[in-house]
Length: 202
Image 1 (tube, helix red, strand yellow):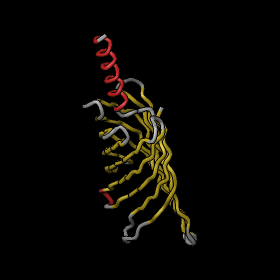
Image 2 (cartoon, helix red, strand yellow):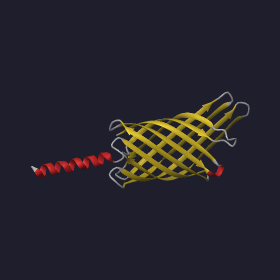
Image 3 (cartoon, one colour):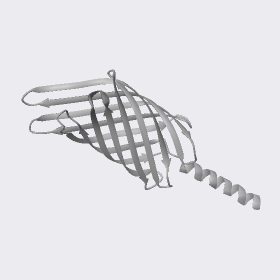
Image 4 (cartoon, helix red, strand yellow):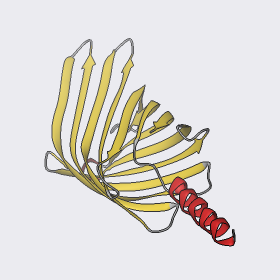
């Protein structure tokens, strides 16, 4: 009888540890607001949406994809900014509740702006990214994640910082907030994005 109780306790402990680790099988939708610095020290503010997700290929390998689309319309013209990144990731558990991870991604950015009195201009370039991060289930219901990516797009370098916090309502459904910053050193400008997300994990 004692052996049975001990065995059941070990099984329960093992299951709990697995449940506490970050889940890499997920898809999420996000409402986002983006500000772009301009040389005139005036920000361009836009809003839109993002769709992202990841899927485990094994215990330590996953694929990921993210698409953002924001825009702004005014009496003078329109601005639209789309970005896509997709690639491969590698995760490793350093505790039962925390993973470190690295990613390699294809990156694409398209910016289209038009001023009624002048015309339109566009920027459409692609490149690659490499990043490292950490995801942790701080509690059974609360998750934190931070990540930094080095980007090379059209031979110009940038750093992308990404941080998020999620509250898990159920095993599958969670709500979160996030902040993303593109630090464009070569042109001394930043792109800031705030988001509110709904995530489904499976």
